[in-house]
Length: 109
Length: 114
Image (cartoon, rainbow over all chains, first blue to last red; front, side, top):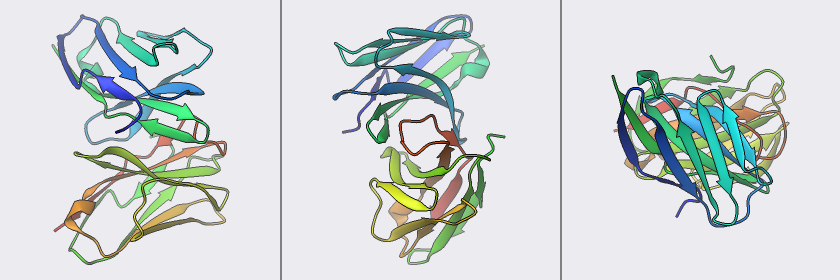
């Protein structure tokens, strides 16, 4: 199975609501990254959190990392229709960056 | 525009054929990565090159090969194509050698094998 499994697989919310998605992993990491992919397009890097960090913010994005539980979460606040996309976590360990299966987020106007 | 250029954007071919996908990394990036994205397998790492040399190999089939040229562009060659090779193929680049760097992705090449 892939490292960096996302949960839920799909999420549907109304514009203005918050969206939270989680990522779990199995082995130690150097950092964990979140990427967004609009339908059929390339992935875009959103945020990187290092293993010694617990929380990071970027605009409406908030990422947390709990190394004891081997999990991370991505929170998108005050969602917009333009946030509709798939979100992937990527676990960086040594020389490898392994992507999870992604969370499909639909923001309804 | 991410700065990573992939050609062609779309490609339709038949089983048994061979295709070449091309990638030009973002200016200044020395590492190039190839990923395959299919509905059932997710995003799978294939191979990484750094400054012309192979640095890491993932789930790349023997029918597939890649290289990075002195001008840093890269090509992914897919041969003896099968229906299951239909997928989006992404190239990504980064400044450094370690895959743990932040990656900049191209728009992808959609391959359809009929």
